[in-house]
Length: 325
Image (cartoon, rainbow, N blue to C red; front, side, top):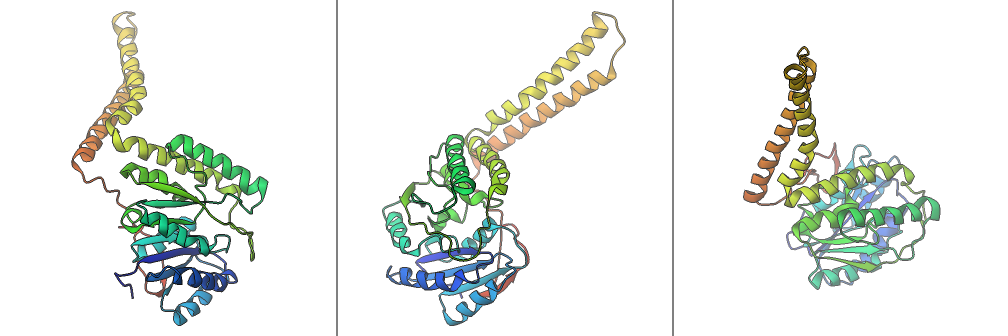
């Protein structure tokens, strides 16, 4: 049962972390008890192949502050995190990894920062305990690139240990690898973001679930974020920029076909003229879309409807992430 008076919710995605979950639970209890706030812990099993779900289910049966949720298959870290956020009832929502590399003792520092007036507090693993070549170097490059593209200079976008005002994070769309771009996405609404140093531990159990294979997903998501950030304030301008090449190509093709007939006396080329009409129509459609987007922006309420709507019982299953509302 979810209580409206919950002060802090901690949402944690888990994938094959049967050994880490009990230890993490004990560490969380110790850290959260010190807050003097009501709290809840939401464990989301992202389709683990081991006994992670059975482990967190047993914990939930013994501890009323814990909720255990299960995905029927592995969807990925971001959808699992989105599920935990959706099910959270706290005024402040904290997210973190379930592999014991994030330290729950840092949570009070996040809550204090939120109390100072910040909307999002991001953890910075300043002494990161990971492999240099496969984790640290790609992460530093990605953080630099994300900062340049989005204009939000966060040192460690990949750190899952973050705290949010629930009213803000519940309206931010999360899918693919989007959890690392939350500060950039929230900047659209003028969110106040802070970054604090956090402790980072070496992995104690199991093996890392992430590696270089995620790079292409991050790059694609970065393109999406750049588009969202850019289009949010000037949609007509950006649609016009996208439409320009099509309009130039279309008008040029039509002019060339007419020039061939009128000036040179050559036979009319239906292929060239038809291609020109298609490109011109595409450009015109994009301009129309820009006008429509501008109208929506000027008259709408600026809320971004979330993309994952997930419902579950305290100990239950998710068949699949749907559209969040």
